[in-house]
Structures are given as structure tokens and as C-alpha cells.
Length: 434
Image (tube, rainbow, N blue to C red; front, side, top):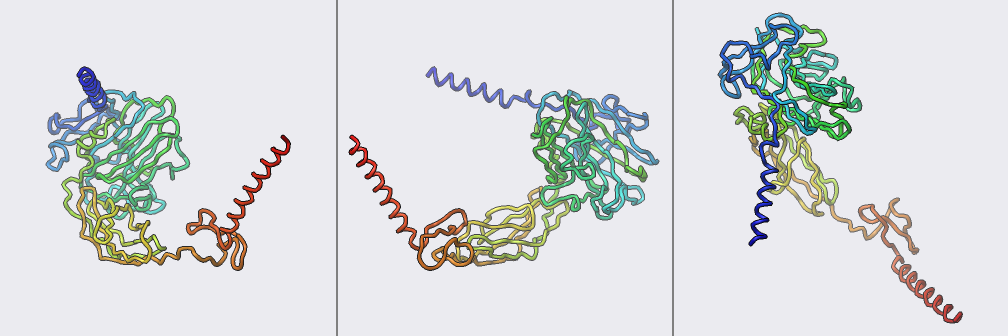
């Protein structure tokens, strides 16, 4: 009884330490709900870096994703920035993983796009939001930087502001590379609509760091085994509304809106804050079209189809075989391996988004795996010896090693008998010496 009580106490202490909220820290949070409608954002935390007029205002907004008030900047004249320097509520000190998240919306005036339509040589982007310090600077950028954005759309990419990881950066930037997205196929964002950003940074002054980016709940960027800070890598502040439309700084009039800015070391804060939500998205992606199946071998069938579209973004595809869900794919292709030979399989696929809206299943496609040759005969250049007698070896059916051929078995038997004879002779020699 004493041992059982002691075990229970130890278990409870462990759970307290492991799940005690004191171990999770929100280093900054601001959502404007306590501001007076129409008033300037409070100092602190909103400290204009260059000009007092750079400070935004609190504004009621019925479309706000979190509460009823938002932070708003009316950019009505040509300016290079409305930079605000924001101190952390608690300065991050632990060398851990951090999450930087917020909601944002860019409203055009007179329908004039804030950033131009994309092309390989077009640059027009903003240093919209960042966190920085001594050896730390990561920036979330909006706009266009050689990504080829669609007309009346914009996208997002990451920069580090430091000489980090030149082996993976292009134009000193980290472009989208996850869930089928890329520099030239970036997620396309709309004006006059709320979106969400979650940026993840695992702190590391060696090559064990990591960054990730979620847009509207869809993960679009991931880099692992990289450097994310230079020594000492300490944190100082957040930066907001940095340089606009660089390098030309020709930004048109617009209204910028933000809500619920958070910097935390706890993923659950991101989940609870709704940053991975889809804003009430109930629309399923379009049905994948043109599904085809091709047998590659006796154990593999490859699938391909035309990618679906979605009002927010397609997260991936569900793969069904003979009516049962077997796997998912982030791209519009899939290889099904480990199949039986000489067997017909029937496939369909469906698309899903971040809100788990699932499309109708596609047309079906079937394919029959090849017959299993069994490897009982050999021909062609894969054999080291062929035809006639001999005790040559050829590769096995999967090419990973030799197997006996022809009189190979007889060779092995003779080898064993020879070894036995050698052992007997050696023992006889020792007896004679005695």
C-alpha cells in the first residue's frame, strides 16, 4: 500500500511539472479589444520608430477575426514605412521553438493593386512584420518578389535579415516549398479578405534550427537543419510595417488591418487562437480530374491526376484503393507499392482543405500489376554466368545479392565435404605428431 501511494504521488508530480502552464510563455499579445474606437494605438507597446504619425489606430470592424476591434493604418500618401518598434511583454530567453502569428487584411483604394502582377524580375514587397535582436532577425514579407503572382493577388515569403543559410536562399529569401507550393507556385492571397500567418522558428546558432510557415492554416514552407541565429542570438523587439513596396517604394493608397498578434513558445496557443482556422470555410475543393493509373512492376502502380482548386487552398489528396482509404498525398501524384502480382486494383482520389472539407471522389482508374517472373530463369546482361553448366552466380530478383545457378548447389555440397576433409586431415596430423 505504501509503495502504491508513493508511486501515485511521483506520477502526479511528474504530470504537474510536465503540464504546468508556467512552463509555457506568451512573450507578446495584443488584440485591440481594450482600445477606444478611433483612438491611436497605445504607447507602449506601439512606439513609432521614425514619425509619431506612423502609429496606427484602434478601429471597430464587424469582419474582425478575433473580437470586434482591429489595428488599422490608413496609408493615404506615398510613404516608405509606418514602422513601429514593439517591446516584448516578456523578453524571450529560452533557446527553444517560437511561434509568431497574426491576422491581416489589405484593402485597396479605388481598386488599385498594392503590389503589381508578378513576373520573374518584378520586385515590390513589404517588410510587414518581424522579430529581431542581437543575432536574430526574421521577417514576414508580403507582395511580389520574382514569384509570378496572379493579377489582383499577392503572396508571402520569409527573409532572415542576416547572412544565414546562403545554400538554400534565393534572392536572399526563403520561398514556399511545402504542400506542393513553390516560389513560382506560391499560395495566392486576395485583397479585402482576412488571412492568417503562423511563422515557426526553432532557435539554433548551429545547424539544428528550423523554420515553418502556415498561411490560412496551410503549411507552405519548411526548412530543417539550418542556422536561425548568430551568437549571442538574443531577442529585443518586434517590428511592424517596415519598408513598403521596396525597392521602388511606390506604394499606392491603401488600408492595412491586423488583429491578435502573438509571440509564444507554445503551439497550443496557436491552435486555441484560431490562427490555423479557415475563417468559417465550408467550401470543398473541386473534384480531382483525369485520374490515371499505370502499372510499373509486379508490385507498384503509379497514379496521377489534375490538381484541384479551392477558395482557400488545397491541403492534399486522399487515396482510395478498391473503395478503402489507404493514404494521402500532398501532390497530384502517388506511387502505391507492395502490391500483389497479376492483380487488378481500382483507385479514386479526393481533395481536402485545411478545414477538412473533402471533395467528391474522382473518376475511377484501374491497372493490373505485372506477372511475377519468379526469377527461375535468367537471360540478358544481369547474369554473371549464363547457359551450360558451371557454378556461376546471378543477382537475386531485387538486385540486392547473389543466388546459386546451375550446379551451384553441387558446388556448395562439394565445398562442405572439402572443408570436412581438411579438418579430419589436420586432426590426423596432430595425432601423428603426438
